[in-house]
Each structure stands twice: as structure tokens, then as C-alpha cells.
View (cartoon, rainbow, N blue to C red):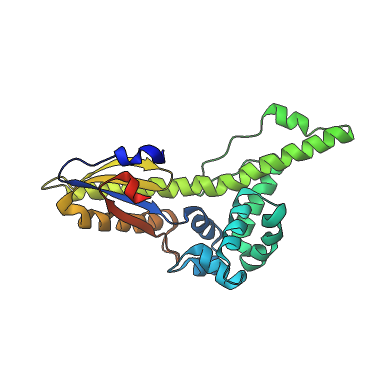
Length: 244
């Protein structure tokens, strides 16, 4: 919790190196869809701003709302109104989540980039889809759409988790290699797309570069050589509160 983050302090002679992956999920979506237009929007800058500059007259808030709506299935309201713009601009990326949604609605199983599959529908869910009355049909359609929102997001979220696991593995491997003479630091915290390392003060610059290089290596390991960056923001701090 933010109220207690300032209590998280490094030992004397050490600093924290905190890093988080910038806009990980939409970048993963671009990689899954092999969407060169979305990859271009992400190149060298804020992905949401890149989308906004091309499609929403520079309005970053609209671009973010549209992209989050696409990944989480918000098809009504403002997100729903903006969705067609994304579909026209990035058909390959949007096609990934749309296919995931349709598969879920039909009771099929979807998988991540590395093949981890979502749970199959329950027998109870399958029974609801065998509706007889109009009321049962409406309930069946509602439950189908709900499962479609889950499977739409599963494809992206599970693949993003795989990227993060590759990143962690690369960080650990590189830390071990850098610690042959003296400890370079240790990984002490991980949450979603953020890592924290406890590092000797005189090795902060070295470890900060190591964390960024590990992110690039994770991208190559998972997706191969692709024209898409997965940048990480690396911040050396003396309190976890200073990283936010």
C-alpha cells in the first residue's frame, strides 16, 4: 500500500533499483498480432501517445481508453464508440482479442503465446447454453459474453505474464554472472510488471543497465527478433515510495 511504501528501505550502503515495463499488455498484443502499424506507434515513445497522434488527434486519454477497452472487452459507452477506429488502424492486433472473445463465447479454450490454456467452461455453463425459453436465451447470451471477455483478455494477460517470467529469469541469470567476484545485488520484489532489486550503492549503474538488457533479451527469447520495443523504466531509489 502507498501509505507504507516509505517504510521499505535498503540496508546501509545499498540502494533499490526499481523497474517496470511500460505498457506491457498492448505491446504484447502488437507482438501476438504481428501488427506492424501498432509496433510503429510504440516505437521510441509512449505507445498510447503514438496511437493518439495517428488516430485521435493527439488525445492520449482516448487512445488509452480505446486500447484498454479492446483488451478488456468494454464494448459499450465511450470505449465502444472508439473501438472501430482501432479496428481499422490495427486489424491484426484487434483480430487477436476478437478471435479470443468469439472462442470463449462459443465455449472453446484459448491459449497464451507459449501454449498455456485457460480453463474449459464448466458443465453448468454448458447447460446454460442449451436454453429453451427467451429468458434462458438472454441469460445464455449474457454468460457467453462474460466468458468471451475473460478469454479475450486471457490471451494477452497470460502472454504478458510469460514475458515477465522470461525477464525475471534473465535478471537472475545476469545477476549470478555479475556476482562472480562480489554480490551484484538480489531480486527482492516482483509484482505484475515491476521488479525491485537490492543493490550495493557502487553497482547501481551496472545493475540498472543489466535490468534493461534483460528486458530486451526476454523479448528476443519469447518473440524472436521483432521490430517492437519493450522498454522498462529503471529508477534507483532510497525508498520504495520514491519509485512511484
